[in-house]
Amino acid sequence: MEEEDKKELLLFQMGPVQEFIAQARSTRDLWSGSYLLSWLVAHAIVAAWKAEGGNVTFNDMVMPSIRKEDNPLLFALMDKRSLMDDDQVRKALIPNLPNRFAMLVPAGTGKARAEAASSAVRDELQNIGEAVWKWLEVYGAKPEWKRRFDSQLAAFPQITWAVHARKDGEPFEMAWDSVNDALAARRNTRDFAQWDPVCKDAAVKDSLSGREECIGDEEFWSTLKRDNLFSKATGHRYGAMNLVKRLWCHVDDAESGKNFLANSLVFRERQIKTSLLVPDLPSVAQKNTDSKVPYVAVVAFDGDRMGTTIDGRKSSPDGIRKISAALSEFALEKVPGIVERHAGHLVYAGGDDVLAILPSSKAVACAREIREAFHGMEGFDLDGSCGIAVGHFKAPLQMLVKQAQHMESVAKNRYGRSALAIAVYKRSGEILEWGCKWSSPSLSLMNEVTRLSSGDRPKLSSRFPYALAALLKPYELGKMKPEELSGFEDVIRNEVAHVLERQGSNLSADEREKFAAQIDEHFDAVAAGVDQPETRVVGRELTDAEKKGEHKVHPDDFLGLFLVETFLNRKREGR
Image (cartoon, rainbow, N blue to C red; front, side):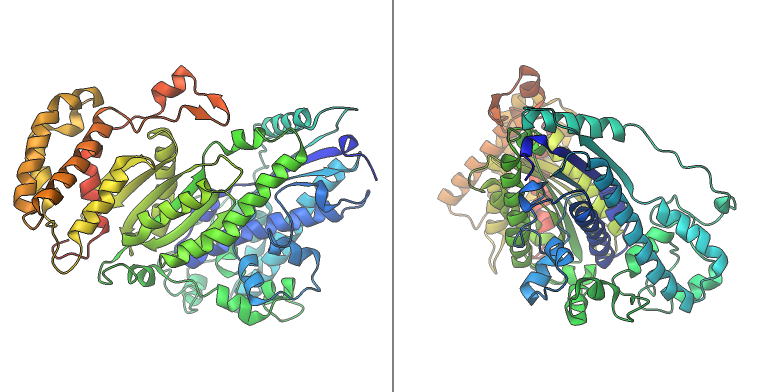
C-alpha cells in the first residue's frame, strides 16, 4: 500500500450553491434544487473514488466523511445492491453533502480522477436532462428547442479542482494549504464560454434566475400549466436548469420506465414519493401558535470561521476527518429532529450549513436549539450565526430565502458572529430588523416578553411595544450614534416605567421590578455597543482591529426587540 505522505491531494469544488438553491417558487423546489447539488457531488465523489489508477480506501477520504452512518447517499451509490430501510432512506434524501470534497489519491492519478469526477457530474446531469426532456415532449416540446436546453445544461455547474503532488516528507498541513491556495487561484480565473448563436433571439428570460432564456413558447407553457407541477406557476417561465429542478424527482427513467431517482438508488418508489410530500407555505403557516397567523420564516444557519476551524486541525488528515464526521452527525442526526419538533420543514443540512422553513412563531426557538446543538458538540470549539426572514406565506419564497441568507451575513458582520439577526416583512411594506449575540441578555428578555404576553389572561398587554415606541419616537433613536444613546438612559428608563404601569397592570410589583431590570440589561447591552466580543477564536487572541469591529449594534435595536417579538408571537388579541 502506498504511504500516505506520497499520495496526491485532490480538492474538488462545484457551484454556485446558494444562488441556485434560492431560485425557487415553492418549498418543493427548494428541496429539489438542494438535493440535485448533493446528488451531483455524490456522483463526482464516487467517480473519483472508483477511477482507474490504484485503490482508494475509506481512510483516504479527507472530507466529507463517507461512512454509512455519515453519508447514506454516498453509501447507496457505491453499493446499489443495498436496499436501505426507511430511516436510512430518509437520511439519504436529506440534502447533506457539501459542494466540495478532498481525498488522497495514488501519485500521478489526481488529474485523471478530477477529470473523471467532472465528467460524472456532466454525464449525470445530461442523463437527468434527457429524462426531463422526454417528459416535456409529451407537453409539446419541439426539437428545435433542444439545443438551447442542452446548451444551458452544459453551462451548469461551475466546476473547479486542484491537485497537489506531495513532496517526500512534506507535512500534510503544507499540502493542505497548497491545494487550497491553488483552488482559490483557479476559481479566480474565470471561464468564459463562446457566445452561442442559438440564444441570439430576444427570448423571454427565466422568471427565477433572470438570465437564461426560457424554453418553449407561449402555447407550450399554456399546455404545461395544465399539469399539477406547473398549475400554480401562472406567468412564470423557466430555463433548462429550473425546469430540471422542478421535474427531475418526478420523471421516469427512459429505459426502465421507473421513477428516475428511485431507479438510480434501488429505492422503492413510495420512499421517494414520501420525500416529495413537502409542505407548502400555507401549510407551514397553519402550524403557528395561532393557526390564523399567515406568516412563515426562513431560517439560515451557518458555522462561524469554519475555514479557520478546519485549518486548526490540518496537521493530519485524521483531524479534518473527525470534524467532518461530527458535522455529518449534526446535520443528519440532530438538525432534522430539531426542525421537526418546531413544526418546520428542513430544506438542507450540509454540515454546518442549514436552511429550514418554519412557522414564524417558532423560528427563534428553533434557531436557538440548532445553535445549541452545534455549539455543544463535544471535542470541538464551534459556534454559528443565524439569519431569519419572516414574511406572509404569499410573499415570494425566493426573496425570503435570499433575505434570510443576507441576515445571516448581518449576524456575522454587524453583530460579530455567534449571533442572530431577524428581518420581518409586513404586508404593509414596513420592514423590521433586529439582532443580538446568542449570549445577549436581550434573547432572555424576548422570551420573557412572550411569556408575560401569553395565556388567557396575559400579564403584559400586547400594546406595550407600540405604546413604548410612541413615547420614544420624539427622541429619534434611529438617528443616534451608539455612543450617544447612553446619555438617554434615565429618560428611557422613566418612559419604560410609565408604559409598564399602564400596559403591565396585571404584573405584581415584584414581577414589574424584575421585568424592568431585564429591560435595563437590554438597554445597557445596546448602549455599550456590546454583547462583548469573544476574546479568543480558535486558540488565538483577537486582534485590536477585530475587537473594534466585532459588534456594531444600532440604537434601534433597543426598541426593535419588542416590535419584532410582538410580530412573531401574534397569538394574543390585537397582534
